[in-house]
Length: 471
Image (tube, rainbow, N blue to C red; front, top):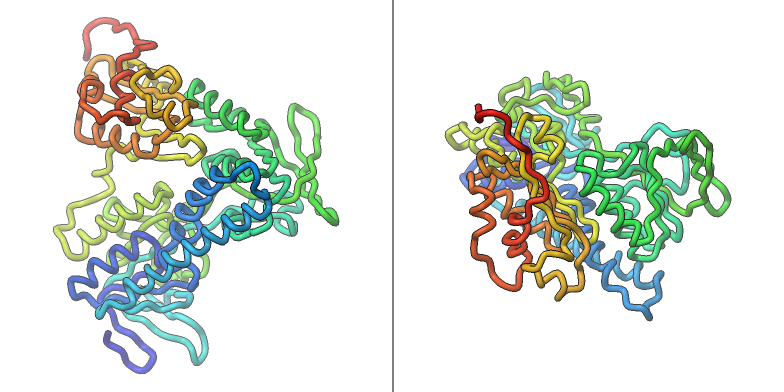
């Protein structure tokens, strides 16, 4: 690494140790490029996913289902958090060593701020380090939104998701503000650990993007886990007491209160751009605060790229990974790959059982002008899925949205055991033009969850009647 006094010169500078940034750093560093990666916290090597996101939350999902009847709720939860923290620590050190031990890569811990389009400063005073780079990647991720509710930000009982997963004291009564993916996932986790969970959702229903039939099954499962879901709830105020907090909310035109021991703000995340000094670099942001990029992830400065949550795209680790492929292609490849290449991006909500979906809902497909065929079955009625009975998890529903003319799979909603895996098969079929009947008639191992497709895709519950010839 070229250095002059307290200045480093690099071919590529990566700001943020998230998935996209670290993969790009490892790839171009392996090709001999001089890389500097700056991460502001020694607790975030590897990014959000292995430290405070996907890995710890999914590990908690796993642990929450392992408690035996004789286990102390308090002790079991504390041990689970400690096990998860040991896992994330292992991942964190592994991520750091994998990059910092490479001859061409240097990891710097500190906060980076742009000085000009090719220069950032890390630290202040005598500890200030200047880094000059030909190419720069912004990979700073996102941060939790704290809604503007009276008393919330100053409440000693208010937590972010990061705070909650590090808390070894299980809250007896947990309020979750927001019934989106994050809120529902945490509700499912903590209800299974033994908390009384109340979800406050402003919309008329949870999972508002999904079709009503699928959302209703999900809500029934959550209610069966003991989760109280209050939809149409407008939280007005948080009042701290000596030993608990009071949530003041409006519902049905009336004001209500509920006492809780902890409050999780789960109303979303926003791109983390504060303090980066983007103005000094001439990097534009969108009206939502994301770094503005084109389909090749180039910012308003063509030599500066933005990867992952910070660019305002879907907030998934696997999208950040795909971002790295686009940027690597720009840096050392042919420069052809772009976000326009993405087809059928799946998503999963890790409740129990998990809910995974891809493509269009039935409502969206009709609004887009498709004549649709709907195949659907409750998991408990799928004859070709004995695995669900073998593992004692028969809750849920599987639904496919199919173009009635072309047999093209337009979308799928899978709320079932192994849905997080099944959805990848459906996604692959959609991406490469495999028809619904081909997926239905494929040969799958037995007993497996995948063979459910043999039954579900043959169970037609609705089909649009065509009018005239197909245009």
